[in-house]
View (cartoon, helix red, strand yellow):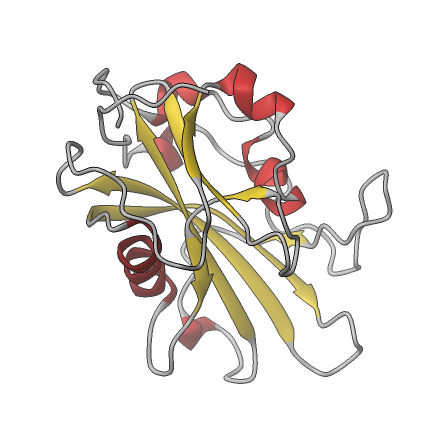
Length: 196
């Protein structure tokens, strides 16, 4: 995979591409491999104020430079070890999901977000049967400066900027593939620079 340095994402994607299934039934749907896929929530419900305080949250960042998406490799000894993922993580106390996404991008990749726009929000009941929902919110990020090189934290051993074709060939975590499977990468970014 090549690395290039380039452009920021288009924060208007949410208006360009409606996601299918918003407001789907609250059962726990599974994909063809039996993995929990969750319910696609309506846009605008990505605030902790919209949900019970006990709910859990993970927030991810889609960052493009030109036609390439930033992926971080997960620690081989950790959860989903060795697979490729987006920058992201859990909320800190008192934090909103969009704030968490921007913070995680800065902490994990050394990049600053100028704007974050909700791309997809899935939720599911706790898989252990406890009385709360778990939310996974993915944001399209416009970088503050798309010429800053990626500086990884100790959390990830490697990163890459990938084309759609490369993405399709990599072992990418299932919840990221769920969000990006039908996405038109050409409408997600509006710059055509090179990445680092």
